[in-house]
Amino acid sequence: MNLNSGYPLAYNEPYDRIFDKRGNLYDLAMKQYPAVRKNEFAALFYNTPLKSTEHIIDLPSGGGYLKNHIPANVTVDSWEISEGFAPSKDINYVNINRISQDIKNKYDRGACLASLHHTEDKVGFISQLATLLKKSGIINIADVAFESGVKDFLEIFVHENNAMGHRGDYLSFEKPLHLSGNIEILRQEMVTVPWNFKDSESCAEYCRLLFGLNGTTESYSIIHALDKYVGIEDLGSKGFNINWELMYIDLLVN
Ligand SMILES: C[S@@+](CC[C@H](N)C(=O)[O-])C[C@H]1O[C@@H](n2cnc3c(N)ncnc32)[C@H](O)[C@@H]1O
Image (cartoon, rainbow, N blue to C red):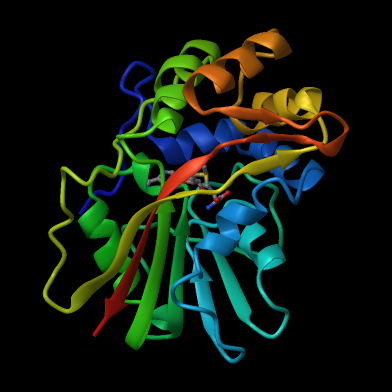
């Protein structure tokens, strides 16, 4: 099974290689503005709350950001595909096509955030992740949906303003996931998970780093595109939010 997506086709590089090149900027954004996506992380567990003794695998983890958004008594192992994020002893690297037997049936829960649009073989990816869970394990997924302004922001604005482009294969209610019989869908819904900033300038700076936008991309054009595709909420001295929205899917693995 080859889980590399090959996107964006124009650049002809798979996304693990693309993140080898721009993962450091993504990581910088996440470390400089650690609380921006807190609603996104929290919403993973809205319907299946974490228990204190749980052991989670976060795959792919980027620089291990989920760890900062869960209770201290829950254990998270961060596994990443690309070496472009800040190398750290806390991050394990894995070839997704050759997962070691050592971590099979080990975890209570798998988390997969903002990554499935980089692979066409979503069912293959989820099946691999399911093999790492104990019986009755839960998988919490969140990703960009085809029917969303976030997808348009990525496919139109980011694609035009990132030297490597941005092409994805997005989750959609129109394209059901044909999962194997032992995997049950508990939840599939769109959730608005606002990203919170101090002001519009920090929002523009964050997006420039996170999405690897060309350094010359003007702040006003980033904010204009967010307003057009995603929606913004300018609260003046109280902050600046963007209406980020993702599809959340919870799965039970029997
Ligand atoms: C937008 S980052 C998300 C990282 C982290 N989960 C987060 O929420 O910040 C996208 C992730 O997808 C990973 N990726 C690259 N190619 C992939 C593929 N073919 N299948 C699944 N994930 C892939 C990247 O290595 C990266 O970790």
